[in-house]
Image (cartoon, rainbow over all chains, first blue to last red; front, side, top):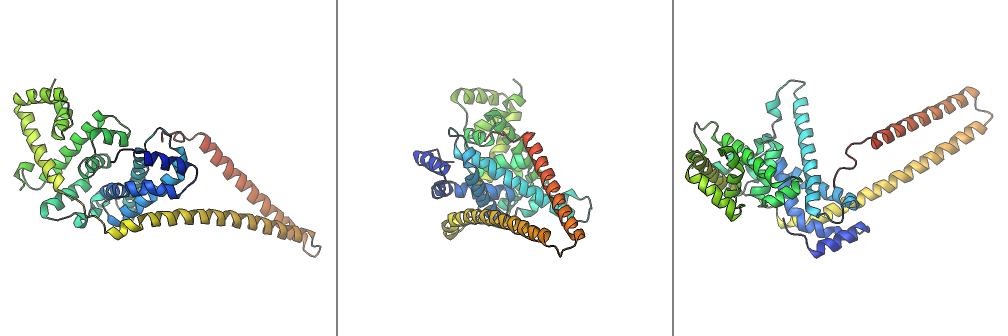
Length: 195
Length: 148
């Protein structure tokens, strides 16, 4: 996550005055972060692209509500995350309702959409890790994505999640513990047995 | 401190997020705790394999068109708002004129005139009711002052 700069402060001021062109500064600066975070949260390329763009549109419409002393990215991140979570809920609901009322929660798992096709330089291990990430619950997947895929520091993650560093470390601990458990399942051993 | 209290320090140690003092404190604990040492080793391996996973970067063309996609959607949404407001105003005006003509027209039966007035009154009641409900929920919305 890049640090706030003068360019961003000026663009923010202009956007408040209604200049849509100035918003391009934020889009160019954060579009890749937005896409990869959305991809990490929803697991699907097309949805990630659409949701990241929609988040920018909502941010543009509501930028007047962003307090001048607040940074753009953490605020934008909340919009993006809420959109992704809402999208996942709708998707899970559609999946369960398509079963004609059958109670089958496993079918509604997020992991169905965590296709390994989005992983670069694929191999069996990477595919397994990606799909295990898809099986984590939203709040644990979120910290793994921000830490491992966005290389954000604990302080940056805490700022984006509006929580303290202690909560970030605690969530990371349980997320990694769960990830480890998911990767070891079915192999009859611990993660140390993996190649 | 128990092993459980060192979990947060373990994450910080793994991700190089500790101060020198915290690092020293954790390493001291590690020297005397094989359980935490083993757990740290497992986490190290997990971190290494997770760090190896990178995602495919979309083509440059996608990034070049990205802002245009957003700009077009913003522009279109403004167009839709203007169009909807104009359509509502024109419909209200046209409806009003049509009703005025019908009421003034002596050849139109009384039953039709009463029916038409009842229809308008019903629509007005529904509109006020929905508006009042929206205002009621908006005033009591617990999230309207949510931190932005």
